[in-house]
Image (tube, rainbow, N blue to C red; front, side, top):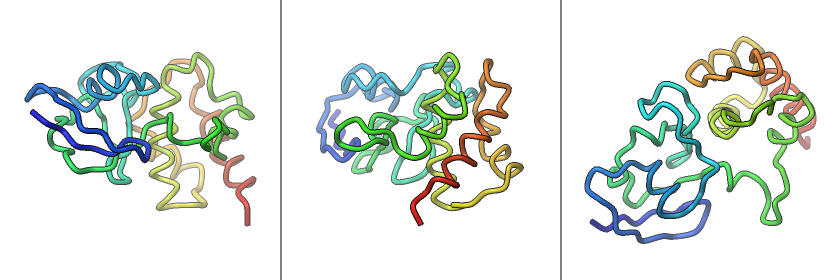
Length: 155
């Protein structure tokens, strides 16, 4: 079946299996491997992408259900020349990357969250990332990364 989506600003028309997930299309058809395959059950958040601006676990989203949609992945966060965005720089500065497996999912979850709440309190950040699992950081560095991103945002 034919899927027409815009990924990180680029239009794509892809032949997909009827039950393909958005994650499999991103990784296996478009070779965008920044979106991680973790649990395949929508529990860990490693596969989070933005679909029309909203955070979604791509491992449980049927690819054909997003036909005509805009999908943004971690590869699309920075500038055209591979520059890091403010949240990515905050992750680096706060040491929130650790092993890095969960980082893309956290970045995408927080990108959607911070569009709605540009100056969140620490407890709001913790609630926003409740659906993402990290085994390395203890989460405090991730909360610090948001604080850094907010503090360094151009006024």
